[in-house]
Amino acid sequence: MFSKKMLWGSLTALVLITATSGVVLAKMPVHSLEQTSQFHRIEQPLGLKVGVAIGGLALIGLELWWFLLYKSSES
Image (cartoon, rainbow, N blue to C red; front, side):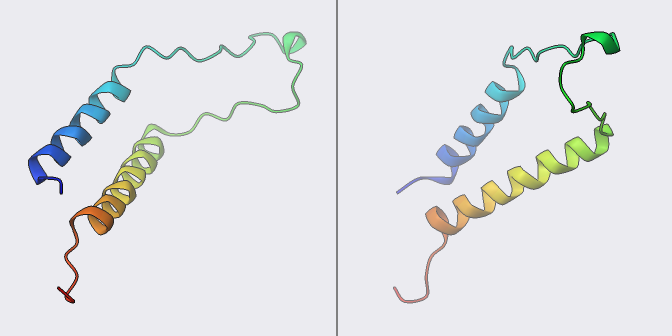
């Protein structure tokens, strides 16, 4: 169905596109008088962000492997 080269190429392209996209997030207000929300931004450590991203990519890769590449023993 899919070759491994095409799958890895697609995954690499997806990572490069999402990593280089020009998404701009809304800025948080600087002054407390400007805040209208009851929620406050909590800065997370970079290691935690990277770990969650890698874990998510690993789970996506596992699902792709399971549904596209896994060969059952019944065949």
